Length: 578
Picture: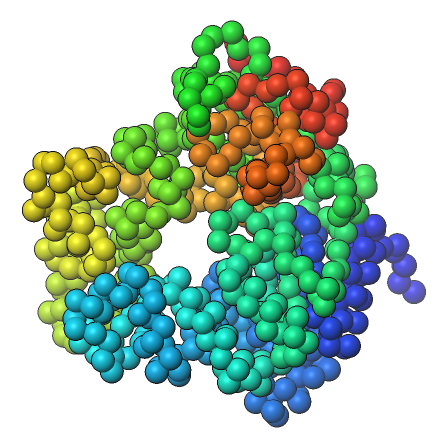
């Protein structure tokens, strides 16, 4: 007879939440599953889908209906599809794919709506009006041709929200998808989420809405954050399957309204906070830098702490330990792209690839070159765009191989400007319209025009820099190094996490956040407080075993008191890098 094992506390809490989810599905009540870090949110989502497949899958297929599962990334889409065995009653897709599939047949309405998008209106006006052009969406780049208007990713969400005002459109959505699940609901476009709540949840009609996520893990600006309504059943998943008790105890003190049960009460780990208040030199000044260590000192503190932790048994291999740099102070120097860093006035926008040059080089050129060098030509054309892969002759293939090899070779020793010039010549891959437009403006601009334009000034300074810095920046943004920023921490977990907290982020001030916790912030600063709180929580919830925080920003007594209430005074110390 098999041995009966007692469920651990996390499993008991998780099952309790899952039972609530199942009850809501069977009673057709919309719900929000609030699953803290490490709670196993995706497991609950998949179990909910499997329940619907088991109980209603045959009927859904017979009625030509499906459960829509909107995910944040293609990776998440593939994971859901895999874990539901590709069942035909489930359609897992990103929000852009889901919305476009519904919107694309409403061409007359789309032609009207695109005229409300300023970036497209200008392009359409230049060619004499919209006419009968087809509205399309392929690679997410705005483009107007003789026959079509191609949408940006953001445009798809705008037209979706506009179409949701149309009762016929809502009826079609509800008829095709009687159940709509949203993964990582907190990061869903705010206008889209509001539209779903207003037209379906509040109205008490349309599809069953199921939201899976965590409002405290919203760290992207356009996300909906906490979505709440009286008609939306709140279900808290009070479990943590990731972290040791030492880490979970800290998380529960930070967030007592969603206490988590531990998977292994006997697991051993550590939490430690190191601050730099003992530094006697001159700290930085200024709105975004005030109170932080000078760059060379911050580097010295980080290097010394890494050595201390390594001596304590930490492995700093990328797969074992992640250094989360919630500071701009030493980031660029550590990663070897400091010259690019100095070019851009707003560093946060650089890391989010809001500049078209950086976005194109990091998202298209770099992965395309990596695929070409590895002989994965199908992957290369997938990155560049499917249409580019339609080669009609052997000579075309030879031309592509020759020009891509020129690009790969130039990347190693050339400048960013030389790479751009080569791409203007070969068009392999083709430069986006936004990059071409800036390059042409720069080439024809007078000195005073360049000086008056931040964009032209930045690109003029960017062009002569070594392309190797762009490669380093791309590797960092793409999470190919031991370092990461707030944009690389979401959803990840590692054995050990070292968080470096300093200044330089124009929207983050850790000392101020700690002084304000839990509810001492000014009335007009709630958004700032939540933004800081969420990122701090996300960073602290990544480790499985060991968590260490290094504050390069000077901390007040009020901030230290908050940290002591979370970590315990015995785990907080002034670090001496000597």
